[in-house]
Length: 141
Ligand SMILES: [Ca+2]
Ligand SMILES: [Ca+2]
Image 1 (cartoon, rainbow, N blue to C red):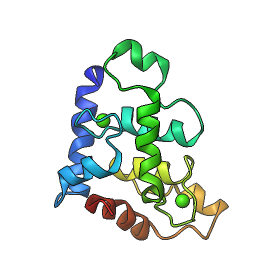
Image 2: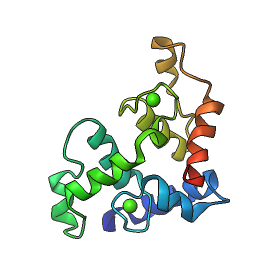
Image 3: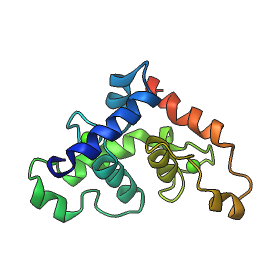
C-alpha cells in the first residue's frame, strides 16, 4: 500500500510480465480482491491466503495503516468467487499452503513450486504446468 510503493511496483511489473497480453483483465478477474486497482503480494495475496486459512482476510494492523480497505466480508466474498481458478496445481482443492504459495512465487520470479514440496509430494505437476495455469487466469476463465 502506501508504505510499500516500490514493492508494489516491482510486483506489478512481474504481473505485467506474466500476463502481458491481458494485464487489466488479470486485475479484474484474478486477485485484486481489495479492488484498489493494483494486484499486490503484500495485500491481495495476504488476504487470499488468510481467507483460505479461515482467518479474517485483512490483518487488523493493515486497517490502522489504511482505513480505506473494504470490509472483511466483502473481500472474503471476492476471494470465494475466485473458487477453483485458484486451484493452480489441479489438485481438486484450493490450498493456502500450495496454490497460494505457487502464485505468490510465480509473481516474485521464483519457480512456483518450492523444491522441498516435491520431496514431500512427487505428484505435484511440473512447474511449467502450474505456471501455465496461473497465467491462464489472465483470461478470467
Ligand atoms: Ca489490490
Ligand atoms: Ca490445488
